[in-house]
Length: 406
Image 1 (spheres, rainbow, N blue to C red):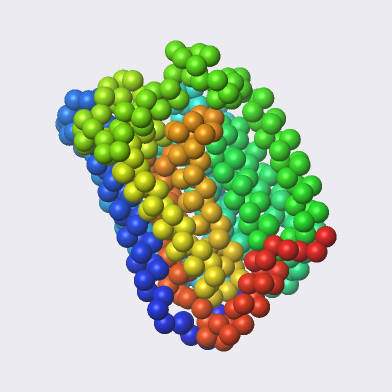
Image 2: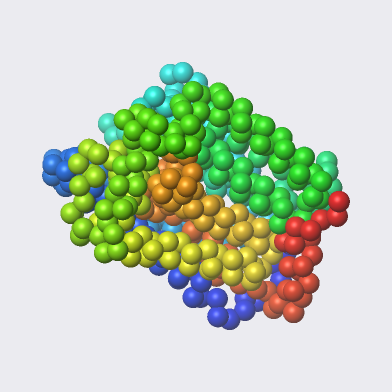
């Protein structure tokens, strides 16, 4: 791993501030839409215990998420200065996440919800909540891959020393998550392959892994009947309008009825039992219905801005590890947002993947808050002066060019 050298270049304070500000802005939009889409379900935004309402829980998650963003921002700056602490944190996080993913597969430990065992029930002092291990797996995979592919003593083009360990890690995470959550496993696979590509791994290795990965994803699709049914519904949503095609049809109805300016906050009708998951996975449809295409484009613009700042952070990162880490974190946010929007606009088959920072839920929101805090830490450290003059050479080399020899 490249050591810290030089001093931070000026002009980097805008990036972390912008990242955190954009994340908070998306969370506030999410809060407003959760309030709008759940008022008709809960009948009261706050009824009794705040924890028992969707809006109350989301308020708590947003507050905790903002705290976690700033904690992870400042903590990451310290960890990046110590290779030993960084190595320990990356490996420990991956191991804990790995056992969490295993735990949801064990009967009696998982907390089933709507026919899926993706959650673990954690409780203390009479208070309990569900944790979804596949969410922190996103951060754990990116961190572990960035460390594996940038170790000082390892040639990134080496098959056994670099490619095989990274490929095994990606395969394990994708397989464990994919048994219960196909959408997230696909996200992990895409991000993992992207990190291998830009790190400089040889293309012949990557092509072989892509072929094996496509076969594995097909196997995951065939492993669950409902996944094949969703794929069939995607081909023709009107073939079964009251069954597997119902949710895509209602999503498009919500988006179309919003026109350019929408029906106004609280004025949507799809939330009245017509559009399932209107406050979680399909919240973007509710945004378009009540805030119109203008509101939808605004949300997309916020994600594009995060992508832009993330890529600037990749370009200006201080070390090889931070550069690859920033790429993986940026790719995770952008890819998941694109996947969710593609699903709700029926450009992709229905899958249970949330809209980052916006959809209701705790595990995903808190994970992305930590993720953007770490990304902000990379941005705040900037380019070391000694590396700045050689930046073009570094970016064009095997660090990020991804043009490894065959």
